[in-house]
Structures are given as C-alpha cells and as structure tokens.
Length: 82
Image 1 (tube, one colour):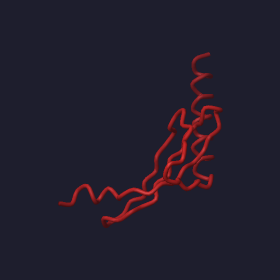
Image 2 (cartoon, rainbow, N blue to C red):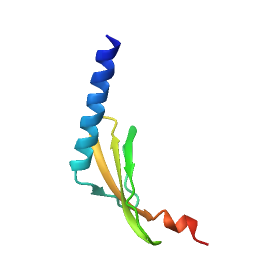
Image 3 (tube, rainbow, N blue to C red):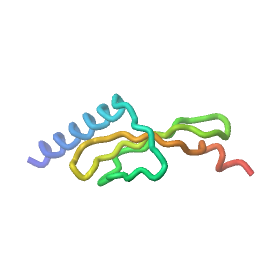
C-alpha cells in the first residue's frame, strides 16, 4: 500500500513539473498581490556575465491551481564579483 502511494505521489510530482515547464509565465508587476500557498520550483537561467535575467517561479495558489510567474533578478555571477 505504501509503495502504491509513493508511486502515485511521484507521478503527480512529475506531471506538475512537466505542466509547469510547458506553461507560459505571467510577468510580475510591481505591487502585484500574489496568492502563493506552496512554491513548487524556481528556475533561474545561467548567465556567463553579471546581468538581469528572467527567472520563473512555479507555485500552487490557495485554490490549488498551478501558476507560473516570471520575474527579473540579477544573475548568480553578480554575487561572485567584487
């Protein structure tokens, strides 16, 4: 019984991940009210230089719907520079 539950949970997680990758991200607007119940994943593109990149956050809202939000942030290279 536990194996079946574990398998079902893994299958749901994989389907949510593939759904999130195929969904178009809604751009974040400053001051926008967000309804985030649980963050599923955050994707930040790699960049060889310090620049602004568009990250995507996939999350579940309080109604249980999966949504994708695009927002801008500095690339990780910027934190390593002096």
